[in-house]
Every structure is written in C-alpha cells, then in structure tokens.
Length: 550
Image (cartoon, rainbow, N blue to C red; front, side):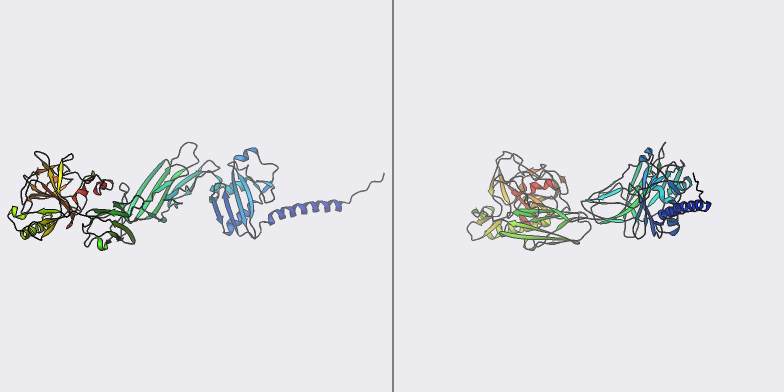
C-alpha cells in the first residue's frame, strides 16, 4: 500500500480558507447594517422611540455583533417582552429581540430568521439605556384618553416623577417633573368631558380653573356649571403608589386647556311637537321664549309686525321674552329673529283667525254719565294700568302649575262680557272695546283670589275700577282685579296662587256685582282666560305650559 503524505502547506491553506469563510459569513451578517441612518425601538404595546444620533446608531449596530448563534429559543422566552429594533437605510431591516431580566437570556432573530444569544455584557448595556424602558413593564408614560363630546384625544404629560424596576431589581428614574403648558382643545355646550386611564390611578386629583382676561385663574372645580364662553384650564394629578412586588410607581400630571363655547338655544311656548321653533297662537294669546346659553352676549331682537317694542328680560345665561299677541293682530305668518354674538335663531309664529263678540250694550246714564264721559273714563283707566303697575320683575314669578281661576278652582260663574267684545253705549253711536272679561259669581259670598304667584303692584282705589288689585307676575305680565268690596292685600306683598285678595263687590262704575278681570303684557291687553289651564271651552292654554320651562 502506498501512503500519500499531505503537505503541511495544504493543511495550512485549508485552515486559512475555513477561517476566511467564517470571517466573510460574519462580515456578511453585519454588512446589512452598514450605512444605517436611524434606529427605531418599538414594543408590542405601542411604545416607540427613534434615534438618529450617530453614537446611538453605532451602539445598536454593535449590539448585533456581540452575540452567538443559538439553536432554539427557550420555552420561558414566550413570556419575555418582545421588542423590534428597526435599522433604517435604503430599506428597513427589522431585528426581533426577546428581552429578559436575566441578562444571559436575551435573544434576537435577524432578518433571515436566525436566532442569536446576546453576550451578557452587551445585554446589560442594552437594557440599561434610557430608551429601553420599553423592555420593562414600566407603564410610562401613562397616557389617558380624553373624550370631549364624540371626539377622543391623548393629552400630553406635562409633569412626571416616575420609577420602574430594572433587571438589577432596583428602581430606575424614567422621568422627572417638567412643567408644560399643555394642549388646547375646543368644547361646545352641551358636550361633556371625560378622562379615562388604561390603568386606574391609586389617587386622582382634578382641578379646573377659569382663565380671566388678564391671565389670572380662578378655581371653579366645585362650581363647574359652565354656561357661557370661557377658557378653562384642567389639571389632573395622578398617583400610583409603591407597593410590594410592583414594577413601577410615581406621579404624572396632565395639564391642558379647553376653549368652552356655548350655542344659543331656546324653548318656545307654545310650539309644534315636530318643530320647536314654530308656534300657532290666536289673537289675545302669548308667545313665551326662554333663551339658553346667552352668556354675556348682547341679544338683538327682530320681531317685525309682531311687536313694536319687545322687552328682553333676564341677564347672563338665561333671557326671557314674553310677546303679547294683540287682539287686532291679523291672521298670518310672522317671523322672529334673535342674534347673540355669532349665533342667530329664527322662529315662526302662525297667528290664526279669531272672531270677537260685538253684541254687548251698556247704558251709561244708569251710572250718571254720558256716553262720551263713560268712553273717556274707561279709556283713561286702561291707559293708566301700566303706570299704576310700576316696575316688573326681571324673571317669571308665576307658579309652576300655571294660572288658576280668580273666583276659585271650582267656582260657579258666568261670563257677562267677553274679552275684546265690542260694547255699544246706549242712545249713541259710541262703542268701545272691552279689554277684559266680566265674571259673575253664583256663590252667595264670593271671594277673589290671586290667579298665580307674584307681587302686589297696586292695591287701592281707581275711579273706574273701585277697589283694584294689580299683581305683577314678572316679565311685564300683570293681572288686574276690579270692583272688589274689600281688599285683603297691600302693595309690595308677595303672594301665591290662590291667596285671598278680597271680597267680590260692585265698587267703581258698575251696574252690578262682578269681577272685572284683565291681563296685560307691557301695554298690550291679552285674553285673561288664556292664562288658565283651560279656557271656557276646555281647551288647554298657553301659559299652563310654562311649568315645563321654568
């Protein structure tokens, strides 16, 4: 047998080739990370950090060089925090890391799916970097969800003092308090503001401040019924306490501003069920409008032919408008316009046709007066009532149950003269309009009662009405009670619906015992029967609805 001896130089050459092959394999593995322009670290819960400085890029490139091939990922690695490190160059290259608190058990897969185990020193250096908080259960930053109306936001952290546990078992500072102004959001009435946390704080303090024009702030935390335009400063202070076996604890502050604006709205009485800004009213009735969220805005009214001198009552957020529909108002469609700042409201009033009685007659000679004298006397009396009533309350004073009958809830009576009835004076061509109703009681000792809550604006003698009481119910609405035999109230007295005003009588210029009952708004007389819960025909009336908007 012939033995062939392999020359030593051949063996040496083979060894060199093997070493060169290993070197080029290693070089090929790392060559993918040449010319990296940025590194992004992201975990499965959405935490993300992008680094562009060269020192950080060099470090993360070197991490992949300090590892050795590993055959199989340990079973317990399924519980490790998974972190993806993306190396950006011409196209992104992703490495998937499985990081453990045990620095000997930190692994990564390269883009080809090959598994590597990081060297212990490299693993420690990696995990101790500030941006690698994503490798731990730090819960930082704790970002709540801010919901305003139907929109959701993520308010910025404006202050923090936070610690989390590292692989060494010690707590690491991940943030220190830094003051910030925070973002500004918008909110419109009636939207609500809610804040929720992915993990509930052990303690949460809420502070709300109203920012004044000079920049100062007023604490409105306990009085947050916001009903006008304003700038609000919200500060939420959340604490998570250090407890045994916790992985994080600390304090986080969220500060932001809300530009709160109100939208002008209104309640219109009466109104159609399918159109809240359209009313149908008959002559002698009323239209009541309550404005909401007017704030301190100047409100301008446009009522056209509906009213020549409307008066808007109230101030601040709530305003009131009580419009009398004159008995002479022609049938038709009338429009109301309201302006408050940048807001406008348009409403429609449909005035129906209404006929009034015209067959009444009166012989003034029975009172010792000529037709002309009686006509002048009655006209002067009607014209004097607004002056006698004086100032009206700037808000509704009537009771929530509407108005009740002045002769009593279950009174038996007849109407001798209706509202706006034309009365002809005997033995003349003169006539006048009766701006009231005359009520004749069937009781043996009839009494007169307040139709609703209010203040006695007048209690005394008038030439035509004799013993007369005028009650102010607010917003320019007054009720008048004439010809009383006695008076049981005095001027300035606050009264409630059903309080006794006096005994029914026949003082003043009358031909028999009855109650001359009238109502007016401003200087316009309205049908007083429409103040009751039902009129003479049992129809539900207008002002009875007021209880729903008080």
